[in-house]
Image 1 (cartoon, rainbow, N blue to C red):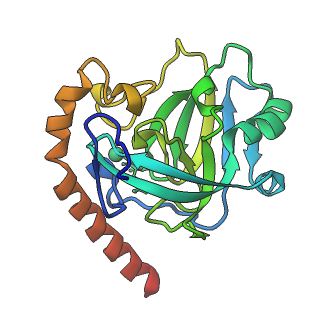
Image 2: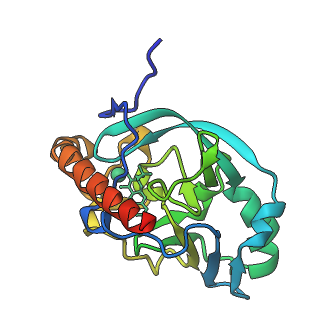
Image 3: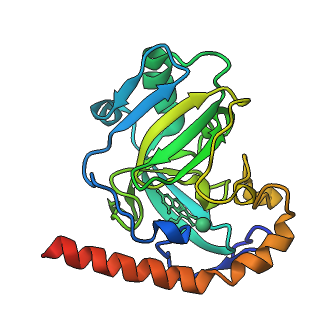
Length: 229
Ligand SMILES: Nc1nc2c(c(=O)[nH]1)N[C@H]1C(S)=C(S)[C@@H](COP(=O)(O)O)O[C@H]1N2
Ligand SMILES: [Mo]
């Protein structure tokens, strides 16, 4: 039986390397060692790296939904649960202040968004370093990326390098234009953007899929060529 897709999404056969066009040519400096700074309203700033290896590993099958309307079904991610990172490392060592319930997610390529701590603590939110049984590729976010299947993929930040805990009143500046980043971006509710109904954005965004995928694929080929030389 075909899977039911969320409103306004279609099934793509290909897992595109994708994002806002200004990120197509940006790649992480560090592609092997996962290292995440914990900053902001915390008692003690941290660098989380080796400690991730001590956490229980999980494998998860989940669908992936880009806000521009393509979805890929049944990706197999491997990694650790964000909730375990929070409970076993961040909470005891960084000690976020009680009002710091918004987490700004920052990436090595400069991409940035925010999520409510409450959404990050859902049991299907991972810090993933494997995809379909293989180490995560640079295309898909090496050394480590967030995976938040219930939210549009712009929350699934690749090349994750910093978690900044802030008071929600402080807010955050996201990568794109303001209307493009919904605080929660829940796929089931079609929260594609801020202030504009999701069903309108569907039609605009759909036009961007092909040119964006081509741009990202070209940049990736050029990057691999450079790395191989
Ligand atoms: N660091 C970073 N994370 C990112 C992006 C990006 O450009 N840079 N693009 C986002 C968007 S819009 C999508 S659809 C997915 C694409 O993930 P993929 O390139 O692994 O397919 O990553 C998200 N996370
Ligand atoms: Mo996306």
